Length: 92
Image (cartoon, rainbow, N blue to C red):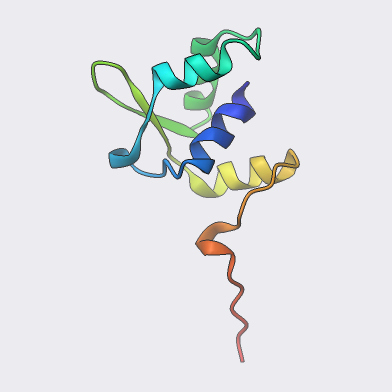
């Protein structure tokens, strides 16, 4: 479930405080697929500093460390675009 949460946030470009993803939407998407407790998964991700919370009436989540999240998703075999839009610039 934790990897799926990270993938949803990455796919929707929730990289900063002003672009948080609603907690209720995440719960609704993941509740049928996974048995793990949603709040426990969020707490694990926050403890590892992958995500952070925007404090609102309903909390919103965004990716706090983009580099770490990219490497985790890549290592788990998910198709993610590299940081910086995917361009490779060669030094002459």
